[in-house]
Image 1 (cartoon, rainbow, N blue to C red):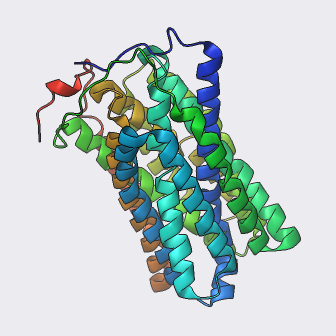
Image 2 (cartoon, helix red, strand yellow; image 1 turned 180 degrees about the vertical axis):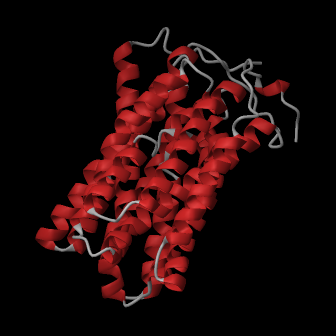
Amino acid sequence: MSTSTTPDRNKPSSSVALIILTGLSLLAINMGVRQSLGLFLPDLAVHLRLSLSELSLAFAVQNLIWGAVSPVAGLAAERYGTARVLAVGGLIYALGLGLLAITQDPWLYHMSNGILIGIGTGATTFPLVLAAVSRHVSERKRSFALGIVSAGGSFGQFIFALIAQKISALFGWTAAIWLFALIALLMIALSPVLRSRPEHQQSVQPEPVSLSDHRFVLLALGFFVCGFHVAFVSVHLPNLVAICGLPANIASNSMALIGLINVAGTLLAGWLGGRYHKPYLLSGIYGARALTIIIFMLMPKTATSFYLFSVLMGMLWLSTVPLTSGALAQYFGTEKLASLFGLVMFSHQIGAFFGAWLGGWFFDLNGNYDLALMISAGLGIFAAVVHLPIRPQQQIPINAMAKS
């Protein structure tokens, strides 16, 4: 039984627009706050007197918990409703940020930044939001709609990086984190908009999807690499700027530029995903990431090279999200998309764990990021290759899948 319906055919365009705008806003807060936390690493290092590898470990744990929570949150959303899960996640997210702002001890730092923010992020992130939006948009329009919503994460990164820089300069880094905590509470107010469900959408009894299906496995492997790249850059770019002797605003400007450029990159990826085979587009994105990293490694480290890297990486940053989620919806339907994409997100966050932690470990070991950058480039080539075996084919309904 296929879940491929045309939910937006009978739904007023204003209602669909509100759902898309709400999803965009939720991801702007979720990703904007999360991706800006790396900008506070130098201040946290001085405040807590911890090494970079110790600080990075909390970010690594945060990414791992985020990934572990994502499929659980997806299952909870399918059972209890997306709005409830988003509201609880927003509350935990805000609590974690509040505790991070007052932390004086390493244990509270790891509890707040590693555990609570990880749980809050995992319960308010892409799988829940994109699955909710997917149920209200037809297959023909879905890829572009997911691109619009996913671009919210990139736009949030642009806005929140600038906010972090300005508030920290004026009032200190703790004031910026307190502001982020208050903004995170807005997710609770936004969550009821995603409570509704298309009345005419078919109700499908949950059936196991084979996790050994090669399309699912290869998409998950590719998303592992995406997680490694995103976590490594967002956590360690500020320190890389610092060791190159450049002003701190180069780091915040670079992160903001990545987010701003990726608004266009994600929209373009969503638009192309509605017209071309999504896995082949993913191969192109990962290959371009590898090339971008290699070019950056060969260039002298100046403000210009950081900004060029940000522009190139910005076009590719979260552009994988609408294509990966859209491919899952196309192959396996939208009814279980929250939990399926949650599992793929777990793979993403395992990659993020290694990107955040290994970056700090290699730096403490060698005094530079050369080895981490080489591994990042190699993983990009690997991800470009693994999507090629996913051939264009028709959607396969859930109950036609082999049970695991």
